Image (cartoon, each protein chain N blue to C red):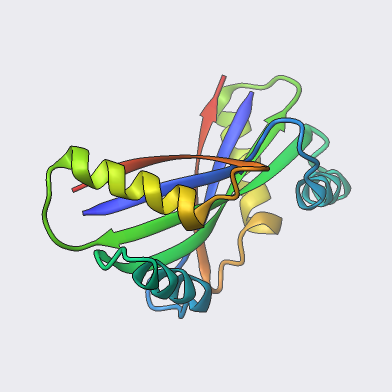
Length: 81
Length: 81
C-alpha cells in the first residue's frame, strides 16, 4: 500500500520560498502567477497488513510524529492500494 | 484559478532525504514504512483569463522552465477553479 502525504504551510505562515518562485515566474513572463505556496509531497511505501482504518491511524501518527511540524504546517494524506 | 503542481524525483534517482525519513520512521516504531520518496507540492494562484487549454499550456511551460528539473524530476498538475 502507498500513502501519499501532502504537507503544506498553514494559512498565514510566511513562505519565502513560495514568494521567490512567484517572483521568478513573473520575471520569466508568467505575470498571471500571483502567488505560490510550496509544500512537501511524500510517497510512503507501506508493508504489512492491517485494516484500512488501522493503516490510516498509523499514517496519521507518522504525520504528527515526524512528517509535519504542526506548529506551522498542516497535512492530509490518501491511501492507494 | 489555482494550479496544484506535484514535482517528484524520477524513478531510479537516489533520494537521500526520503531514505532519511524512512529510517527515522523505522526508529520511531513504524517498521511498516519501507520506503519514502520526497517531492514538492506547489500551489500556484493564477490570475487573468484564457481558456482552460491555454492555462494548461502556460502552467506546463512554468513547470518546464522553472518548477521542475526535467533531468531528474517529473511533474504533473491539476487546475482547480
